[in-house]
Image 1 (cartoon, rainbow, N blue to C red):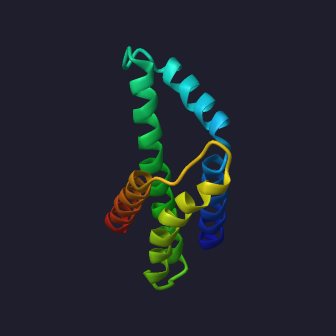
Image 2: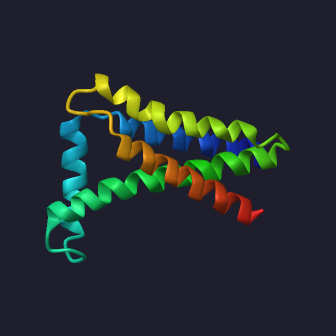
Length: 128
């Protein structure tokens, strides 16, 4: 039962992050700018804060995905090597942006996705 709950959470998170990642440029800009304005007490320069939030989002969503995926594999007593697919998705997620209005491919974002994946996988290994 725990395996199916974990699998469901992993799939829901993957769907959620992929949906957010593939919104058009206007929507993602508006959403992140609104968040930066709400958090302006952290940094007066909202454009700088907006840029930092957008970068941190890559790391954060991929770290959560890696934790969920590795934990799901562990709960299912499955080999861990399928988690390597996250490395491919870290690139493919960015590669598909070319076809979305107002979005573009970014090697920096691929690197941030990979960083999040590695941090999440490391955290999952430390957890169990």
